[in-house]
Each structure stands twice: as C-alpha cells, then as structure tokens.
Image 1 (cartoon, rainbow, N blue to C red):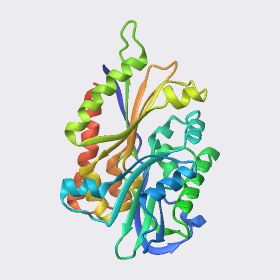
Image 2 (cartoon, rainbow, N blue to C red; image 1 turned 180 degrees about the vertical axis):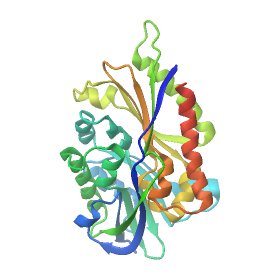
Image 3 (cartoon, rainbow, N blue to C red; image 1 turned 60 degrees about the vertical axis):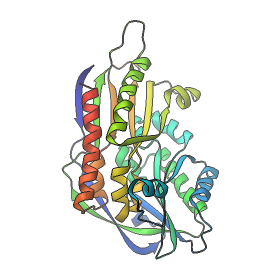
Image 4 (cartoon, rainbow, N blue to C red; image 1 turned 120 degrees about the horizontal axis):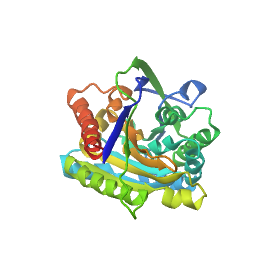
Length: 323
C-alpha cells in the first residue's frame, strides 16, 4: 500500500481549559468555550450514570456505551480518583446524516463522548461534553451551521433532563499559540485487487489496524460502518465507505482524569476512515491527542508523558499501515 501523504493541519490557536468553582447559567459569554460542564447537587445520590443514560436516550441522543471506569481503574491500578467516574459515548443519527452530506469531518466527533463524575467534597454529579464551539473547532464546521447548532441544542436538552435544576460551571480559557496540529490526518490510495472492491480493501486495512491497537494498550469500545448502515438507510450515497472508531487508552485517561475529570469530553476519541465516490484518496483522521495538554492545562510531567505517548503510538501505527 503506497503512502501518498501525511497531512498535518496548519498551526492553529488552541484554547487551554481551566475550571473555576463558580456556578453560572450558560450565558452568551460561556458559549464560546470548548468544554461545557453541567453540575447539580446529588447529596441524596438519586442521580446515577444509568439515570443520565436514560435521560440522554429519552432526549434523542443514543448512548452506545456507558462504562464504569472506577471498576476498570480499581482492577488495573488498585486506586480510583473520584467517587464515581463513567465515560460514555453517544450520537444522534439525524444530525450525523445531515452534517455528513456537507462535512465528512463530522466523523471526528462520531460518536461524541462525555464523562460523568461525582465530587466527594461538594456532593455534586457532573457531565462534561464538548460545547458547540468545541464541536466546531475539531470538525471545522462553521459555528453558524444550523445542523451543528441543532446537535448542540440536543446535548443541552439532554443534560438539563439528566440533571434537573443543574447549572453550567463557569469555564475560563487561556488562549495560547500551539505548535501542534489540531488533527492528525493520513491519506492513502488503497490497492484494490481484480474482482475486489474498495470496501473489501478497507476491511483488510482495518483488520491490520485493529491487530496493532491491542498490543500497545488501545481498546475500541465501539465502531461504526456508517455508509453501510445509517447513510444507506437515509439515501446518502456520497461515500464508498465511512467508518468511525471510538478509541481509548487507559494509561492516558487514568492519569489525566485525576485532576481533569472533564477530559471525558475528549475521550474516548473518534478516528475516521472514509473515501468519497469518484476519488482515489482514502482519508484516516483523528483529533491530535497531545492537544489535551494545552486544552486541559496539564502540567504534571508524568501525565504529559502519558498523553504524548498515546499520540505517538497511534500515529506510528498509522504511519506503518499507510507506507
């Protein structure tokens, strides 16, 4: 398989995230923040990750996976950082179809992710997701796109349903110039043998990719073949294939979540593999994981190392696959 190019998006202004303790409604001044955290008092313990999942489903957002990370962390690391900590992934079919007709990059946030976590001291329960600004930033879909706005509104409706009387925490950003690309993209031309199809060639690529993930600590909670299922069902025929992966590496999210539980807005991260009909190029693209460092204002050296290793490992795998 011949590697055509590795495209690294031009240097961008990235936003670092820090959370203050003040609670405020989501005002116009808060809507330009990349991460949003919705919080409510839960001293009685009535609200759980399962009740939040139901509220999301009832609001039109399908929760595909909702994992109790404390159970995993306890087994792997013999210690947990928070009273409760879940990572979940979710999506809305209608929004994805509408946006995919215009912007293949919607696959970079398909599925979306969230963290659900409890704070012992404050007796609160919190949901962290990408905001409209965060969704637009990763995908480069305009903030003014009505379908992206509707998608963000669905999330807002869901968090309010999940945490009645909840409020958005005040989020402050420090703007800094980053020297890392926002996304990492590879392009390649698949070799299609006589009598075979692009889809079959893609499946061979994916099998090799999946075989490389496990040995270096990655897991795939969920994968989606959207062209073969959702897109086909809705008359969208622009792609030969459009697949996304939800991917996580525990050795990254465990140390990051200690001081930054809201990192679940970024993890698991989504990786997109797609090819448009009539074009030779196959695109493989994911949000650059090392941007967590600036986005979440991570300063601990060992945590920074774990995040950077995660970016390097998956980049190296894809480098080899597209040679």
